Length: 278
Length: 158
Image (cartoon, rainbow over all chains, first blue to last red; front, side, top):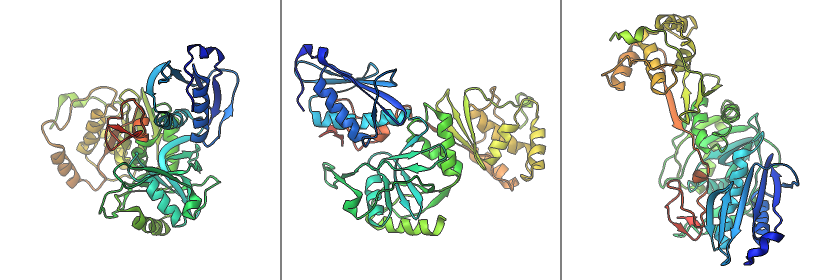
């Protein structure tokens, strides 16, 4: 990416407005090259499921301001968000920001920070924060025959059905720098889900070395409550969010347990699902 | 254990709450405090019965008439105390079991009850999702929690 350093470049700038899951977003700024890069990153982050729009109000605006030295400052709705001079890191962070912007405002869809796979016609949902091993476990489940739906954003309709959001799996190497690499389901010998599916199990878990699988069944209400911190739009739309959480947790079993390494645990989990989920 | 302030007819709070009925529980989101609560069946029954007209004795009778099992007034007060602590009552009610630890109260009432004790679980809903979602970073500070460290190294808070 080349960052323009012409202070007059604002004259030629063309913002990019688009809609995704009912959310209208504008990418604006003073440098066309940066806006174009933001559009490219947005398309990748949102699996190109975006539609350019040309008129009307937008729900949120990302503004990229490039100074004469090439330094970029990012504001969202006039609030400072980030700045940077290393485009790789800056836009990697923007990749997260744009997905959150959609997730927090999506119309008729609920986004939960969770990995998700399909298994024998039902979904297994793995809510969790970053660095608890969601992608690693999802990858192992896919390697063991589960169908890939998402490694970090599980998307539901108001009835609680899960929809695919199959980004490439974002993995971290087990080294001191957590070196990132990406995998596709086909790299794992697996398939990607294409149809909405009902949830069979919600598993609240995180990786701990030497942890033992000790599944505790939660009530539907407790399970829904435990999912609140991972629900993007909860504060913006609590009524819709609670309704969807109810529809998920009332029809699924909710399990809580720590787990050991994913390669050993994946088969244990699928066996457990076979026994306890219809 | 009698407290003159507790003779009033308790009234549940409704303003500023989002309520989701579940098969055996009730989820409540308090928009003022940004807390979500899960009321188990016993707590939910008492909460819904606190209409400003019912006395605690009335609630005991309704609880039993509803086929939930035999309970005492202390059982209902235990629920009201928890509802009160969590801001789910319309007006502040003097604690019934002041000076006693929750453990003592639960032991006393639990031993006398064959019914699941009223329980309210609560947590704070996140105002901003990104902190729990992404450990990517550029130059802005890393989130204070949720990532391995708060130091941005090679584009990740690690």
